[in-house]
Length: 356
Ligand SMILES: *Cc1c(COP(=O)(O)O)cnc(C)c1O
Image (tube, rainbow, N blue to C red):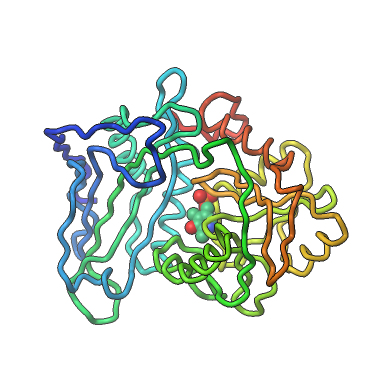
């Protein structure tokens, strides 16, 4: 990079920091943001931390027409000792570059991006909420800015990091969600962009989401794009099942997002001596296990909710009610352990925590 010193311009005014009970997910943003530009020939340059503010874009900027963009999501916690804690942040920067590669966006320097994030967190650290279940959500993202309607990779980009204090995902502790099995639309196909964290995957998923909400479900369970037979993931989460005492989750196949929570859960379960298998899982197998009384738990995993127990699957006109619609034992233990490690309240045998 031509200039790696981050220029800092502090905000002259301070926004009111919301009270913990006012917090939602991703509605309010802190006082500052990180910005860096890319131009062909110049590379990434002009890294800066500036007051949070709207940006200007040329109406022909490529992002507005062809959707060339990627993003990440991670969280910062404030420990009892007031340390700022991150959870495996290097994994997010690595994945950002895998997404960049898929979308023909130039790669970023992962160490530098992490350094910039840490500096931004230091500046806005009073925004990290402390109440149970709250955290500071971090949104790194990159979008194409070249004003040109030709279909080709952009020659210029902007990389930004914004911060948003978020509330407890479940107001009354962790609560099972209802998930509709999506039989009409698909999220991703083999050879597509399923493994990349790119906005287009979400744009294409909204219709199924809206339809499922009309029927009283909160998210959809995606089936594979080729046969609509094998389970992929849930909305913005990876998915796990407990069948007859064994934990299974769909194997990564290029169309499933490689979740960092997913990977952490697999490592935790193995550490506890619980068998976990990554393989192809058809929905028929889940359906049959349910009717044989062997489907003991199901849960989604992702940064936002950490663990989201599934209390019901809607399959066509049938409702499959799991574990009486209550949180299962493994889901609860995983939630308590993972959030305990993230907040610095439990030992971290894997070295996942990073203190800023
Ligand atoms: C981000 C995301 C996940 C979860 O990934 P984490 O790294 O665990 O937060 C799962 N599925 C999709 C589609 C996602 O975008």
